[in-house]
Image (cartoon, rainbow, N blue to C red; front, side, top):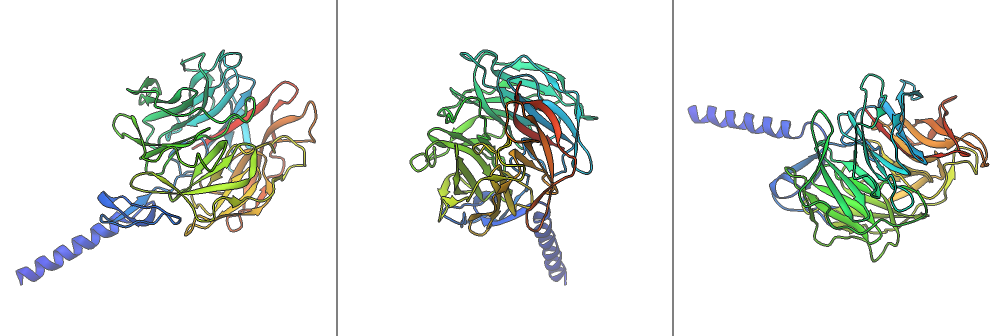
Length: 427
């Protein structure tokens, strides 16, 4: 009887382990060595030993790393310069302006926020041989989202194009003209210190035009891989989880021989696929499966996909319908949005199809929970002095359709004196 009792005890423990191992996140259903998946080819499938990998399902293309919660704050990069505009987000999705950031910079490009929503890092391209470029850090007031004076500046006078924080909030990666710069983020203060070996080799970004930023960097859901979109294709790296150092993935850069002027990129919340757009070309969407063990990218069958037309919900000719700059996906992962429209994602194959050619405006960012989306828009026909701001959209979870929230447009600036380059949201 003792052996029978031991057998049932082991059986119960084994069942409990299996149950707990599959709780939380999104299961990829892909197997691989050491508990990670091994995949390549059009479906990103793999084989091997080890078990099922759990994917956290973070929202993508939001500017804030490692988040699944509804956002509380929104930030917008000003043009020609200065600290980010800051706003709190109400329960109906409408934003309310609060104290903006203050900085002496020129031509800010992108904003990256750590997973806790405590710090925001702003890159600046600079102007006239890099004057007032650099990295600018701000501490977020967690009560109202306000920023104030930049808490620190780094590598001023150098040109930077894009940045991203890893999903654990330990490292900041920044794409510059000399490669990918890596920094440790000090817990509690947000202070940056260079990672040994930084910068890491990468080509310079594509150049579609003066001061046109894009989401050129992405960290995968498992926090193992970093991707940077450059003029030579997509550079891929393995992230050392302890030091933040980067090691080039075999075969990197990817897609350089097939895609000219690689531009904005995004990874799906399931971690299965990476999508890529060309600068100033919204007609084709390139897709790759992500090998869950190595991080290598393999072109999807049928890629590039025809992304259809490029329109806008706001009146034709308004600000917010230039070339592609950001793609964003809620945690549910059913639909992808850019400034040209709405796209469905077939998770089994990675095939992406445009379901609507009415885009929300420029640089859309969607709540990880999928209920609201924000975009840079104008409130009138294109003119010399157009109002520029942010509009809130309600999202239909079943169809992905967008409906402008009445009276949600919030004015940030006027095109006679400036513009808005990019957005970021955080919990």
